[in-house]
Length: 205
Image 1 (cartoon, rainbow, N blue to C red):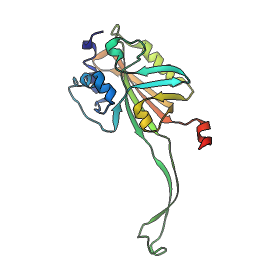
Image 2: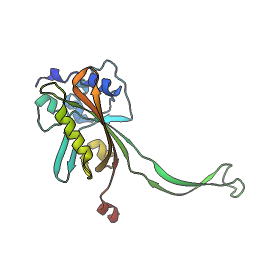
Image 3: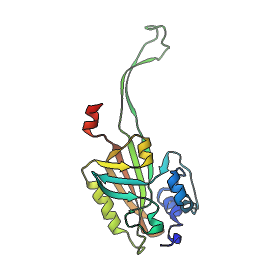
Image 4: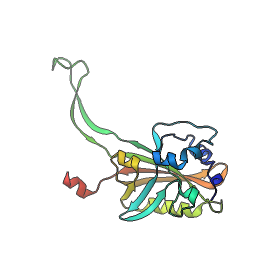
């Protein structure tokens, strides 16, 4: 498979999502993924999001592999290009307002934080499904991503970026797919997921 087939990945990402974040792992840069994005006519950096190779597994079985090498070497084990991922989380905090004068050290409008906890990570995974063989509607890949989203199971993840956020498993809450203007062989998908830990891990803490 020639490199010419992937030089417009940047334009595809830009048409699909309106931006192409520049943050990516060293491995992707060495593989040439950064060069594949430079063809975007509009290249908007979004520091909240990043590219990274990603493997999704159920148990020991690899379900989907998102990577760049497959689009150069025609590796049939690679499902799609690396997705764009975002992470966000909130703390659950109970705050009690304290009137001025009750405690001299507290200013007007002070609060007492009674307790807090951490919500799971909210994770956004956005990517492209491309028919690199026939350059037609990628129906088979769409069926695969839909089947993944419908699984009522915990999905393990292997990715440097996920690991850096302390995330090893996720569950999928929402899937959205749609076409990409100008590319009949490409569909975009957006997955909303949350981090989750095995119950045995929680009991051990």
